[in-house]
Length: 315
Image (tube, rainbow, N blue to C red; front, side, top):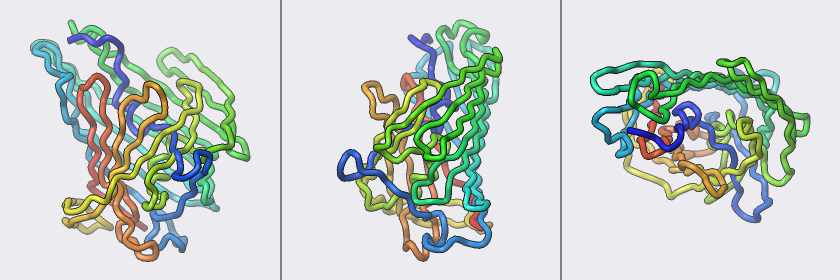
């Protein structure tokens, strides 16, 4: 099996959408409410949220080859949210095994990703700084041998923002070659600006009466400011979920909104779908707009990574 271009890795695709547009006038900004609290109007004295997801691979026809196969197994994704002196810190980590098969031979690698982002505790969730690092083994041109069927990438990215949140600096380091690329950037004061690493948390803070929306973020690898279209679909009912909530195993029907994310560009790439639990009541929100499931399609119709919530600890 051969690919016309090197593929975007699972880690590069994961949680990497870059912007949102608010309903109404095209220059309307969005604001966020703290629906991750039981009462969105009251900040608890202690804040610690920890979520755990299983990550599964669903193959598609792009993997139809007798002599070359790619599989992803044993995936786990974690998030952690804390608050110190009116600054949120949101941390994530992902590990997943990648198995390559060429003929009768197999080779297993592990992809890893960690990130953190700090943001102001305001309705704008203005970003302060972020860090992300990952190691990924991406399917590549060829596939004739285990040595040529993937490319290893190892990068770290640090982004810091100006006081107004409308510009800053990014430092991208290739940890394989030790080459460093530094860039400064500015963001037009038109849409609400977010950092890539805070995007999923921010989606939970949007009003679910939203039909479509937009937010600007800086993409450090391309060095551009991008825009991501966000669309809320109709409320989904009747789906049963099993996970731990506060240490207790639950199996219940949870209503949710499917939210699609796509970059506003001529070549937007894959559309991600996020299932966000319905707001029960802003003052008594049992499931706290938690993300129940995330679907991230891989390039070239290889398949999708499906993130399914297994544990939610709200303190």
